[in-house]
Image (cartoon, rainbow, N blue to C red; front, top):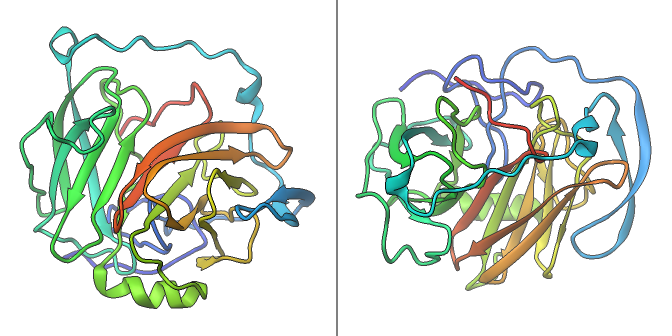
Length: 292
């Protein structure tokens, strides 16, 4: 296993297994030097519990693309009508960057909420914790990721898949052994028969987005990663662009991401299963995943 180090000051990954520091979902942070913006602005947001709160968000985020028209991508009627695209995703442990070789991954159609008819066989990972999933152009759906050591996770591929585009951040997995201590750190008990949501948010330049507020349609407990630590008291994302909810009721959850000026970045729907993590990367409409 490659060496890993913990850092909360960067937003890029120059090394595949550099570090991971977050609570749930799409957690990878990077270990390159990063100078945060010194200027801040005050804004009022709405926390996931409906309370109006004040927060401070660093300036410098680019949301100019939110005003541009978005060209819609037409998905093929069925996979056989589209070129094949290999979707390559790396998965690491959230606290250590460790690789789990017993991970199993399969792809599922968006409307197949129980993955009763998977689109691929169960796939394993290589020595770097990476899986290559044979999909097709304009695919949107999710990956079902399971392991005996980890909280099972649904990762939504919510951007129509294009050739030569891959996730630009590894996906962090939450070990079963760390679930209790992390919940204790947040000061919240894990409610039985509920699930988790984790979201990493990007701005128009593809940088991780600070100052973003998440709004949910349920009474789940919101959390934000701030200075490398998860918090239920914060009201907006820190430099890592990471946030989510715990104790989410099972079923369909709708999450809104709102920029510091109140502009909506995106409205996302996801299915939450009891005991599972539901995660995705959220970008402004029309901003594509960076090519490797």
